[in-house]
Image (tube, rainbow over all chains, first blue to last red; front, side, top):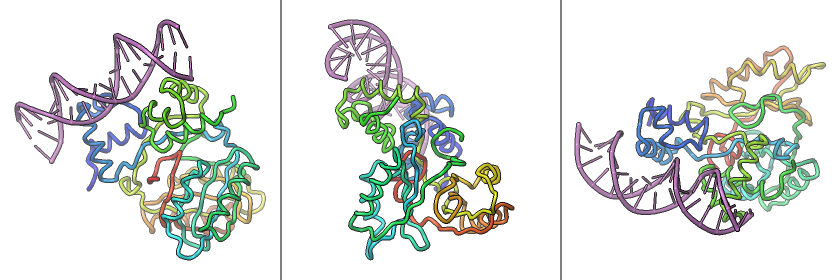
Length: 151
Length: 151
DNA sequence: TATGAAAACATCCAACG
DNA sequence: CGTTGGATGTTTTCATA
């Protein structure tokens, strides 16, 4: 189902500020508040909009240490297992299953090196994890379509 | 201004659903709705929270292929060189210098496999790049604090 | 099938304790 | 920080094109 122009403008408005009111968005795109809500509801049902989230500056939140963990999982681990296992960690910023040697790539935001180490050890101890390899971020160079200050 | 545990839990709650009500979040973290709002307002003033956005299915935007490129750079390449070199590619979603074998980890969002391959070849041809290794994302599992696929 | 108007309902937020 | 109450936003219902 292709998005029509109205839907695209609504998504664009929400992308800039997801807490704008439906009436406000409606004024911009030329619809009433209920009409905007109905379209947003439909976009969510269709899966085009998957949710609403907050943009954060990791450094301002005190998360000054960033790293990636390559996870090697035990046999018969499903993506769902990984997702459920990792969703309990607030330090996990993103996670994806990937091609290559490792099974999944996990992005971690931690307060400091000690915190990162703790999270790494806890994740490495998850039953579905066989071994891990991790790299630390030295300098964030670019961060588009995502949060944070323009470094 | 250090953030305490309460602030982190509020940000975490908003990361999962930025349209949750303050009362709802307050019930989870043990605060009244106005208290939650006051903390959110302060987090925005501090720049810790930079805004609210919608999570969209990249497929709906035409971005169906995601991958990471590990970059191995020539000697005497500075982070600034990498940043300047990569900033010309709209397909680069993020980039960081990292510890380990590779020098930098670059996240790519492309329309399809062919597009990804083109970007990879162009980046591999940059003068500061010695060689690359790339992995493709199979399934995004978690994506917090950013726009993109669902939790 | 999609819209706008209006009513019922929920949330927000400034003022106060 | 919690509570309150008027203002504001949301969501359902309904009539219309």
